[in-house]
Image 1 (cartoon, rainbow, N blue to C red):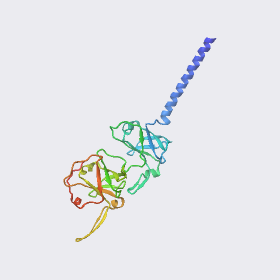
Image 2: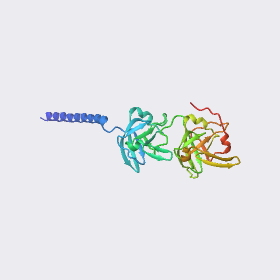
Image 3: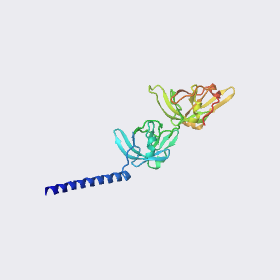
Image 4: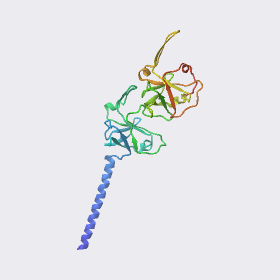
Length: 283
């Protein structure tokens, strides 16, 4: 009798193990199809700004994933993201920017209005395609002035004794034409000056040379001389919002690369107004 009982117990155990394996496989399939999606990227923010599980992740207006989890972590918020398989290779790169789309009111305008009437979404701007693969990112505290950069754009640093017209989102001008944008302003590390990051659009990058000069825009000047009263009024936008203007000499110097630094003059000098360099622009 012992042998049949042992055989029965063995058969029962095998049946139980087989049943558990089947149930586990079914649970895995159902979880993969309709449960919580796997986490590809983890984002750290100071504030969650109302983002929820299931929120859409968008890149340049195209849905590329979903928020799979939101939780408090330390003094901030941890947001986990599941990406579409075809998006992982170019979004999980060092230098990729992530932010929560929300309304922002600045002197330069109002942005993120979609977030005022719809559910919050997470926006993403890809980093360099040859950057290393990473899965953990520090999200931006506020939506950037420009949602994405183009290859060939020129990023520079301007230094000034005071902020003046160097306002976030304001224009960088050349002969009154907008050629770039002020991305942000901050105190220098030693707090002795102001530093502003600006972005010059790729097409206009040849205008910036190592002997170029920048001066504050948004001025309103009255000059009373022998020839009468002369007034100079910049555009209404720069008068209200601020900005900075670029001038380059008739004999342009060498082109500069991203990271170059320039001093900002409070106003345009008389001789600068006479400069008329011939500089072909990029297509």
